[in-house]
Image 1 (cartoon, rainbow over the protein chains, first blue to last red):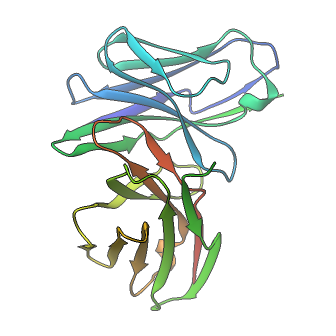
Image 2 (cartoon, each protein chain N blue to C red):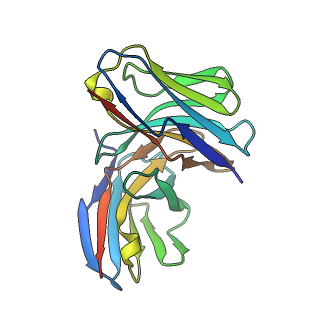
Amino acid sequence: AQTIHQWPVAEIKAVGSPLSLGCTIKGKSSPNLYWYWQATGGTLQQLFYSITVGQVESVVQLNLSASRPKDDQFILSTEKLLLSHSGFYLCAWSLIRDWGYEQYFGPGTRLTVL
Amino acid sequence: QQQVRQSPQSLTVWEGETAILNCSYENSAFDYFPWYQQFPGEGPALLIAIRSVSDKKEDGRFTIFFNKREKKLSLHITDSQPGDSATYFCAAGGGSNYKLTFGKGTLLTVTP
C-alpha cells in the first residue's frame, strides 16, 4: 500500500524567512507528484507537478519553487516568506489510469507566517 | 474565471436524510470529475469519481449524477450520518492534463 508523509506537520515562520516543506511517498515507483495550497476555508490550488526526478512544472506562480531530488521525494521551498504564504500545503500523488489520473493527498502541513 | 462552481456553500441536513451537493463546470474538455471529502485539519480524501462517458456512479451511500449536456453534476449522500459532516470538493480534470481544478467546496453538517 502506498503511504504519503509530509513534514513538518506545522510551521510558524516570520515574514522574510526561508521555508522548506517536504513530501515522501512510499510503495509507489515513479509516481506523479503534486503540490497544492489551500487557504483557510478555501479551495485547493495546484502549484506544481512533477512526473519524474529532476523535472518540475509550475502551474501557479506564488514566489515558491519546487524540486524533486529523488523519485519518492518532493520539496517545496522559498527563500523569503510572505504573509500570503500562510495556509495548508498538500502533497499529492496520482495513480495513472488509462483515462487519466486519480490524485491522492497527504496529511498536509499547516504554515503560519507572522 | 471560476471554471468549477459548487452550490450550496453550506448545507445542513438531519441524520437519515439525503444530502444533495451540486457542481457545474465551464470547460468542455473536462472529462473526469472526482469528489473529495475533507475533515478539518486533514488532507482531502478521494470519495468517488465519474468520467464523462457515464451519467451515474454509485458507491454505497454516495452517488454521482452527471449531465454532460448541461455541464452539471451532483453528489447525493443517502442516509446521511453525523460522521459525513465535512467539506466536499468537486474537481474536474481532462485527459492527459495533469491539472485538477477544484470548486470552492460545500460544507455539509449532518445534525443528529
